[in-house]
Image 1: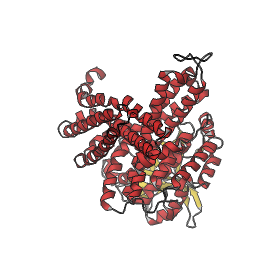
Image 2: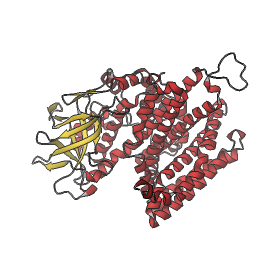
Image 3: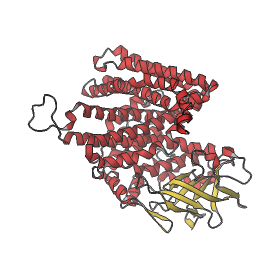
Image 4: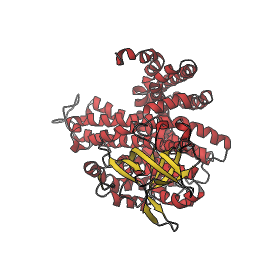
Length: 593
């Protein structure tokens, strides 16, 4: 089946669940005209349905090919990319001074979900280019911006992130790529990088690589890493492309999913070293790279949302068409569509509610980052930056976990046909799997949430968020709407579990850090489930205020299902956080026996 962007759901999540409308009213978005939001998303949805979605299966079946150090993408992909950039989609949130539209990151976040849902392997390419734009804009010299930034913003050239090496995965400080200073102020970089997404392709004339490497006199570990811009082709003084740089794809990976996205081994230095230009300061590359990674982590979270929504739409259509068995009390002749069966309804609601919660968490992260950059009030910017930092690991890890769970449920609803490639359900499942791994595994996101984000300023950002969520729950309780069922009570219990777990972890970080790390992953799940449940309730309340009709009933029902089926797990997650550390830390008796 084809893909249709759920515009109404997205607008409700963006404007009310994520707080865009409130931020606009508070003046944090300057003169941005919010009326154009729906039009942008509608047009993005049309492009995705008409151009990108039809190529999703094509890309999966054909994959990519490497010959003579050159990567060829699947049929139709270069043309689709050319149409995508010609329509201006690469520059939605890019700086206007360099050819972008200057729209809020939150609008681009919604577009990113659309690209990911329609064709996740295609959408991954511009996702990384956006991160490259952020790093260059924030840390690059004026000269480098003049040469490269507009090309990246418009999408005429794409960007990559190059961190990982065979011996240095999550431990970036162990990298061995070398950089040597050249007399002209540039650098010569040698080394090998692996797992480089879109390290080479045929969709653009040039690719701008952002590469971590170490200078000869650099300190050990992450404090001695520098970031370099390395173009595939050098750029002449007049802006034209010059000779090929000493960097090429020496191999491509054969993967479980994402077949249409080239994952390359990149080799530098076969001919004396790739010409590179320093981004930021020497030995401070990790600061610059985190600018890229934080942007990419939100983007990957949105990939989880997008692929989950695509899987849900397909499963819903299948459940309405596939006839098997008869519903209790059915008066129809013959078999009924499987959607009449309670367990199928449960799975579909699980898929939709989890996707909706993850969507709003990601959008709220984007709104916080927008306010941190746009608000005229310094205090508001500081608080928003802390909120964005807190939400980023949750957006990445919770949403990609959801992407894996929802696509798995999509296969289950298809039954045996879900295990057959022809239905397409299996592709979504395969494509989703990597999202919980790249841009920092979800375990690393959990560690970041506990050791850095929760611990920052004694948990100040967490307590501020919990106060806001408590206000939402109070409004649900005060509504006295029987349609909410036990939503208020379930969310109140979840908030209590999250608050107690947060305080316990803060204490353990000081006295027994391994105990805190043992509970990091269930804590992130507890946080995401509670946050998502409260946000869905807030959207339901907003829908009641807007029209109070069947639209509101749909969102109230969705919020209730999430509270009574997902958020209700908060108590057990709290006990896991607090009680499981001893069994985790004594696991060597089993694992190393």
